[in-house]
Image 1 (tube, rainbow, N blue to C red):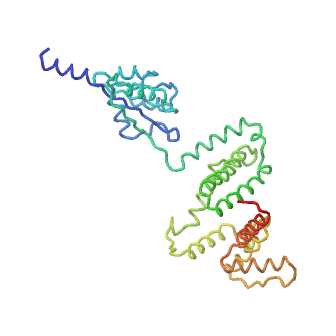
Image 2: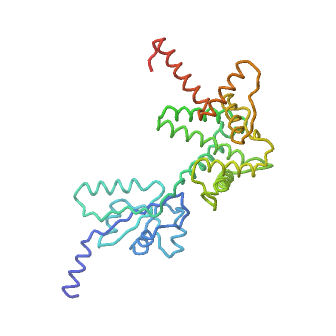
Image 3: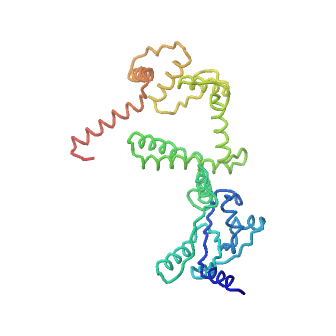
Length: 331
């Protein structure tokens, strides 16, 4: 061995090397890794993974990557990187906190020549990926929770109404944190009902069927977005929507499909809206009484672009505040 090769070997042995912590998302199909991740795996001196059941391992091995099932300590990992070697650690779902904490302690001690540390995300969640978590959590709750496992569509119906009203209240209050939470509560109702529907013996369906149905409906009712139709104003968009909806439903009356169990003012406004949109000339009933007066007010509000339910709620809240003021109750 000449002096030059001896110096090169000495330099190499003194180089602390590199640790790559490879993170993946369980919400993305295993094996779908980024190009930098595949490069790091193929060029590494060693690839380690503490979880022998990690979903990525079969795909890595199929690609010719030799993966060692090992749980190294921080000291072990630093030693493995000596001589300029690169060690890739395929992180488990928890992200290897014990290992990273140990490396941080070693680095803070100042007594060890630390390897280069790199966090390399190998796969990223797509928008909406956390919905998969919600479906999985709901599956487990339905199977293991004594209360949730006994619920039916009928038993949950009242909660859907309550959550919808709480969402409306959060919107009207302008509370962003509350809005986010209430949207989650409404979403839970959808996923819960879909999970119950899977167990129906005659006509089961899943949350994927629910999502697929609304996706198909949205695409069909937006021909100006997904087709050749043109719409440049909100009015033209609404016209497309109503026309395609009428063709889908094949309804005999403009009143078909209006839920009669909704609050009275909202029901009156919806009927008025259908009549006006269809261009029908239907005078209000001539009968007298508070109910008919409210009907006339709701029709008037709708024609002026005012939601009578929201308007009455705003007035009622102002009245509530006035009552509390007279009572001397703050807030």
